[in-house]
Amino acid sequence: MASLAPATPAKPIGLLPCPIRGGGIGSARPGLATAAPRLRVSASASASDVPDFLSSDWLETRKKKPLGPRLNYNAEEAVEYQLEALKYNDRPRQDYGIEVMYRFAGFDPFERSTYFGRQFDLGQFERFRRIFHHSTYRVLLAHKERKILSSLWVEENQYKQRVWVRGARPEEEEIFQFTMIQRVGGSWDGYWLTESLTNDDGDTFSGGVAY
Image 1: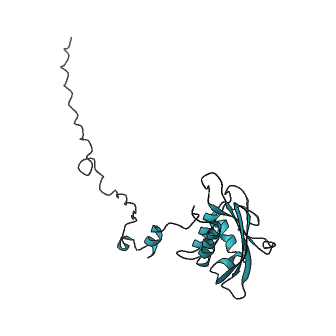
Image 2 (image 1 turned 90 degrees about the horizontal axis):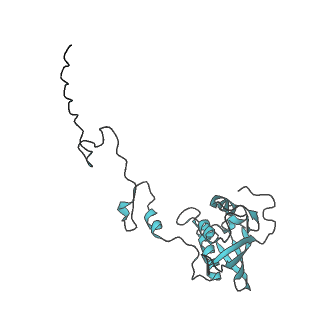
Image 3 (image 1 turned 180 degrees about the vertical axis):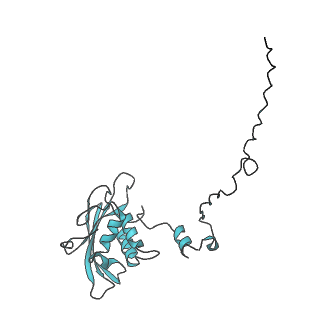
């Protein structure tokens, strides 16, 4: 009987060292691009820190708190601030005044609203913005003159104000009515919000409006 050959001892397998963060074995292979760092500009940054692809006034507008409802605004002040924002609608950026109006709007974005008199779905800002560019409401954008015609306290938490507005275009003028409500309870308790902004011409959208 042939004798069994002695077993050959197994050779030890060398293990690679653990990856080392920052270089050495296990670091990123050549040719793989490293992810670009995300742009971060702090509020305390200087103008020289703003990248070239942003506008020159980007840093200043970022520092400013957006205009909107404040607990210390009364009803008259809330209307005044909104009208002033519309007068300078494109400062500091295009349609900023309409953004201010949207912040003051007191409607539920999940329900059809009568903010403009007729029922509209205003849950998206773009739809709200387009109505302000309608032939009637555009009078408010960059208007030249305005005058309060009347004001009325309907009740303690509801205020109405009628305003005559002369627009930027020749012979362009309209009368609008703000209806302001003061919220009671909830996260907006005590704030004055705009329930509606309607034109005195009750047939404003008779021809329809694409929004």
